[in-house]
Length: 211
Image (tube, rainbow, N blue to C red; front, top):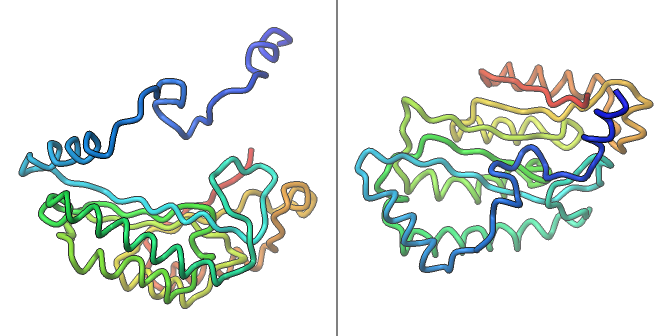
């Protein structure tokens, strides 16, 4: 057992990255990256999925290793929404496949995606969904949420845009563990978000837990 601890008790890349970070060496130029996307979309059967990283959180969980910005200033949403819109427009100007090929997946991660108001989430998503080919038979949209920073209004708006999966960051119901990881959220709060999601028609409700 001692040998196992010695073997595995070392810094390592996060398991969520694959291939893991050390396998990435040279970064492509902008032109190389755009060319690779256009080559992928040259196949008429090609489909694609979209991930939005919404990095803001009001407080930092002590277990977090994500790219986050800790702030209670919700005015920062506006600038970030504008930047995402600008980036999207730059992509579609050079990658026609983003409009021509079927979109099969959409995921909001963070950070805390529900840091953003329902209005700003809609400002991010609706223009893209309205201007792309959504494959209605295969499309799955999901969102990660912090139950303490999620409203029914947000869930209603997202479900109206086609979101059917919600991943709730529970971590642990033990108050002592919550205190240690700096994530206070009573059981009742998590239950109310769970009930609201199911009532609104979310077909997949997932819990993230600390082990």
